[in-house]
Each structure stands twice: as structure tokens, then as C-alpha cells.
Amino acid sequence: MTDEAVLIHGWDPNYYNSNLGKEVPKGEAWSHRQELIDLLGQNFELSYFNLLGFVNIEEPERSFNVEDFTDNFAVWVEKG
Image (cartoon, rainbow, N blue to C red):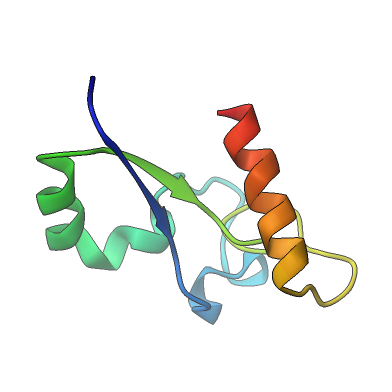
């Protein structure tokens, strides 16, 4: 069994939906960290969790807090 690493990008406005086109690869927010991705990929199966409003994930209707983030992450994990 391969270990999994989940990557969660930072709050970079370059990857906010309004700054991107419609077709965005799932790891796009990590595209500027290719060396890190390559090294992690040698030992882990990589998954990319994108924050609400980023990289083609629906934008929240209101500002969200830590509880909203953890709820959203839990739904993402369940969907696998």
C-alpha cells in the first residue's frame, strides 16, 4: 500500500477562480513547486485539496471560518 500525502495550497490570489480560465488541472495551485511535487511523488501518492473559491472549486457565498474549512475538507475526504 502506498502512503498518501494531501497537499493544501496557500491563499495565493493568482489561483483564485476569477484569475483562471475554465480548464484548470487539479494540481495547478502547486505548479510553481514542481521540485517539491517530484520529491514527494517518489514516496507518496499525492492528492490535492483546493480551498473554496480556488482552482475551479465553487466560491463561498460568504466569508468562511476554520469550521467551514474543516467541514469542507471532511466532505472532500469522504468523496475520496
